[in-house]
Length: 417
Ligand code: ARG
Image (tube, rainbow, N blue to C red; front, side, top):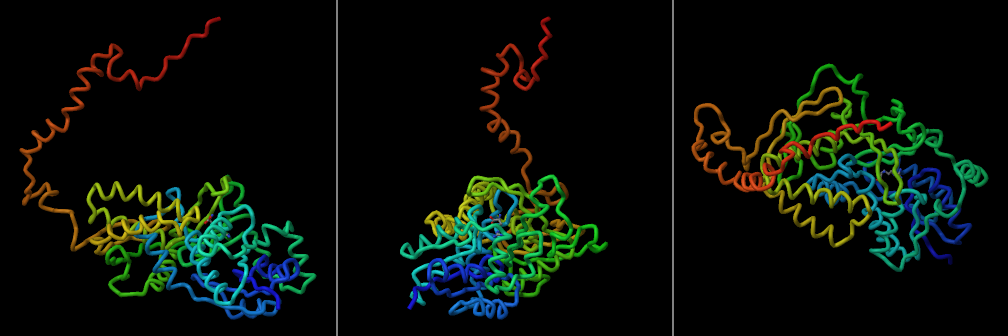
């Protein structure tokens, strides 16, 4: 009996070819595993395809619940955005997939795990590093990183071996989807000066085609987790799906980013992430109302660390566990409702309320009912400004060039000829 390999199977060209290639080059029997993270597909057809190509077994794992609970919501609570732009959709799926592949490998007594990543991207890093951390004895094979075939040659290989060529092969783009967003790469998008063609987008309407009337929605949060839309309680999965739908219809969530990959290159990435965009915005608005200034400042740093570690494939690190404890603790009072206006590519916060709000009208108001003791301000300002005043007298004002000199543009030198 041959040894077995568990392959992360998408149904696309590369992983379909990999089923044959792994048998041919490694003599391994392939168990194909298709993991559903909200990338809507005909999973039973994908499963059957794997078997037709020659997999000895094909599994479909519905991982949407795990994905929302252990990956999306923690990332939302952290406000994780890689380089301030990318909500980390694909990046969040990889450690979950790695975990599920390893589980299947152990259950099936496989000696290796395989995935369809090429040698240029982040996903190979995330898969390899995670699998290695969870199961150091499993061999990792990345056929597309090894086989050295061009796209044309891969298609030829498929034709020679009667492997059906997916219709997506004719698409000019490389696409990866999950509940938290869609990543679009390649084709015309590789020129960073070229505006993404409209056909790159499938989740979002073009903002100029979006409805002419704004739509208002209310998102309810409990301890940092979104639980309702317009007062209606929804499961995490349904809530995200509905927001992808609603915000996508208004053209919200298109992202165009030059991104720094782990492997050292910059790449132009287009994303569609309507639900993520709206939820991150709403969540931050609620935090602005319920967290102190110091918590907000500190949490921004945590968010960046957290986003970097997710992007870099270090999900299973202790740093993640440490930060997660902080993030969760910070969410204790992030409960309330945010009101948003969706209109032609934009979502704006137009209202927020919380039973744990730190916004105190009787302190903030300029109208009747003001309880703020304005007479206390003069003394406060005196002490607050004391270090500045001291320094200015000793240094700034003593400087003969005057207090603005450091900002002054250099005078142009006369041409000496
Ligand atoms: N640049 C994004 C990331 O690194 C998206 C990757 C999309 N992956 C893919 N196999 N097409 O997370």
